[in-house]
Length: 425
Image (cartoon, rainbow, N blue to C red):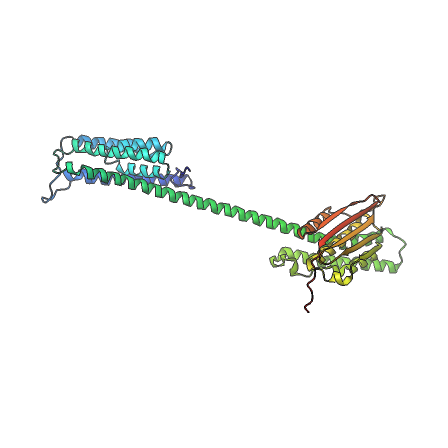
């Protein structure tokens, strides 16, 4: 597996951050080289040597070596600044030139560390071998050109010098790999955090969309029934001129009552938007199938002849339906009666409920399809049955609606009916 670290010394930073990161590294490298040069050259020219220690005697080549050292520093500075364009090649040039220059030792050190952060063995091993060889050759050249007399016992220290040089170079490489590993770990953690944030945002968006759809279905179910009654009775007041004052009063009372109830139910549904704690349908009273007779009575009062039939099931059994099943079943009857009133006003509606505990409860609502379109057709959202079908699918049921060959429109729905627990003996 290839492991890489970003070559930019300041990943994620802007232009000013990158400039600052490169500037302080350059200053640090020059500072390390200046300190090394001071310790190397100043002993012969500035610092007096204690008589207890044998002084280092510099030969006539020392000034020439120092001049070359300064030129190497001036040549390595632009190379160091451009090492990100071709890390392997430029780092190889830096270790080759810099190993013969004490003043560039800091830049070489930082360049090797920077290359090691990439954690590519195909780059690290050649540069390590080149750097180790160049340092050994540079040390021998320095001894030959700068130091006048060979120090006693120098030959016996060559092996120790090789070991220490190899260990120092290895330590620099390991440090660079550690920095690169930490940099890669931080980048990985940032990416994981960003992915986690995106996933959390996606889940929040999905939850909000689901909640909006649920509230839209709830508003449709609650308001469509009431408003259709208001529109129907208002139309009667508008087009029926032969009504006596008592009929007008009764019709207006129905309009007022349904409008008032619609406002109250709208207020309840809007509470879902204002109060997060009201998002649960169980947090406020919900209609159940026990109120279906009131719903049927209201439809009959509105002028729709509704036949309600219980087939092989009793009211007592329906009263023991699970709360969610009872509520969904009520919504199906409410929506189908509303649709019948919208699209087939005055046509007879047949509602049949059948089923058995432990199996499923089924509902079938049929009404004739009018041969001609009504003169004043009530507005329709077009999503009522779609919302009901989604409700039922989420609870393990099914809904099917469509015109039949006998000229009727049928809505068939079923829901699982969990068996009631047996009474203890």
